Amino acid sequence: MTEPLIRIEGIGKRFVARGGEPATVFENLHFSIEPGEFVCLIGHSGCGKTTILNVLAGLDTASEGYVFVAGREIDGPSLDRAVIFQSHALMPWLSAMGNVAFAVRSRWPQWSADRVRAHCARYLELVNLKGAENKRPAELSGGMKQRVGIARALAIEPKMLLMDEPFSALDALTRGVLQDEVRRICAETKQTVFMITHDVDEAILLADKIVLMTNGPHAKVAEIVRNTLPRDRHRDTLHKERHYYALRNHLVDFLVTRSRLFNANPPPGYDPRHPPEIAPGMESTPSPEAAAPSPAERVVISLRH
Amino acid sequence: MQTPAWNWRATLLSAALLLLFLGAWHVGTLPNAGEQTVDPEYAKLVGAAAASGQKSALPGPGDVGSKLWSHIVDPWYDNGPNDKGIGIQLAYSLARVLAGYLLAALVAIPLGFLIGMSATIYKALDPFIQVLKPVSPLAWMPLALFTLKDSGVSAVFVIFICSLWPMLINTAFGVASVRREWLNVARTLEVGPLRRAFRVILPAAAPTIMTGMRISIGIAWLVIVAAEMLVGGTGIGYFVWNEWNNLSLSNIICGILAIGLVGMALDRSLERLTRLVTFPE
Image (cartoon, rainbow over all chains, first blue to last red; front, side, top):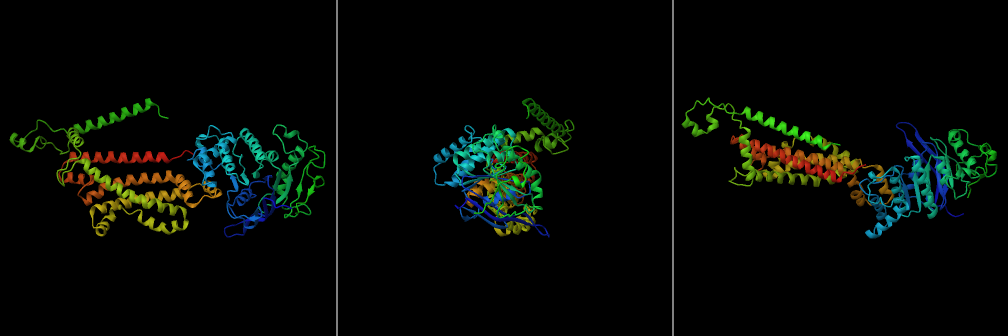
């Protein structure tokens, strides 16, 4: 078995409450990300999604457990793991070009100004920002700001992208357009991505693998859902794909009820170190009713390696 | 937004208020003509104003105006230590203010950076700042005169100490409240500490630092007048005090006006600089 790009082994996060017992946000998390894979993490607020992303980014540390990047334990932030922040996090005193150039100069300090400029222009063009290079963030719309954030992350040519609900602050139309672009860019560049979302449709459109988290406190990885839709998918034809409803219903059902009840009543044989991998709709007919998640209908593939 | 018509009205109103004030001043200081009781020979000797039995020695707007004009046409004359042009006096004051102010900026901005970046240094220095900040800068004057043994340098020291606090506190506050997300961007890009300080923290905190610098220059200009009244010799503060000793109220009013105008110019130029470093969110 080859080494995954990211391997998470039993990480947990505890906060020491004032005078009380330590509060556990999540614990005993295990999952991995293969090179070229697009992984979405879905869970309700408070299950520690952002903390997990920050641990992967090196901005935060887990209270316990280990995270390995290409076989080596994580040691602080790295240019190999670019972060796209929820709030775009652009520096308002720099232009769009300036923001991207700041990142590019961090990666390649020895580059000449012309080379930096050309490199930035290429990535701003990739996210369709040609013509807005010299605008300050305040002069850009929310969607354009997030595009700059994406260009900044891609421009340093990282080994993987970490996205923290990157489109949640955008209106539905802009979100759709940006999702399509991220899909296109990641498919073209075979980028490895770890993205946090609470939007089921976003996960279905973008992800190869969807990690489902139970509610906090003591959140866990309940299961890992393989996206059973063909890799080449489009927003307008998505709902006509064979396993679409089976997949969507499975995810919605998890978020609505099972994420809440899972901790108290884990399914028999559940082992957090090897969360079951599920491919909704692969066995049964893809009707919405039939896709309701009962254990008999699930294909359980062990993640043991 | 203000429309041009609105501005025009405000200007007109300002001009009307000025005229009203000048008129009231003129009427209030009119000599009581016709009540001349003194001998005409004596009147010739002591001057019209004194002889006319005017109740107040306060000069009218005409007197002040002509005095002001004489200062404007010849601000650089130098007739010995007690009679220098208003331009020379203002230049002395400005030089002292700028020297003390720039020294304070050199100390306050790096120190404020340290305080803003480190909670430990902040906690360690906070009691000193809290005790020293409310001390009137003039209270330092005797100590400065004794230790520095030079009245000019002491005045600069007083300006230094009074400009220090607003810059120090604003720099520390600006640096401490740089948004977490910008620092996180710098961390994920593996930006070194120096580049982070100059390329992220400094531009982010610049508007707050500049606000502190603007407060400081205002305070420094207030304090220099009082300091120069104490140390004497040169400067606009000394000029005002000297004219009090000369009982030339016209010159005192000219001095007040000059202090106000220079103070406004200082504030305006700092405001311009602040606008240069301010970024819209």
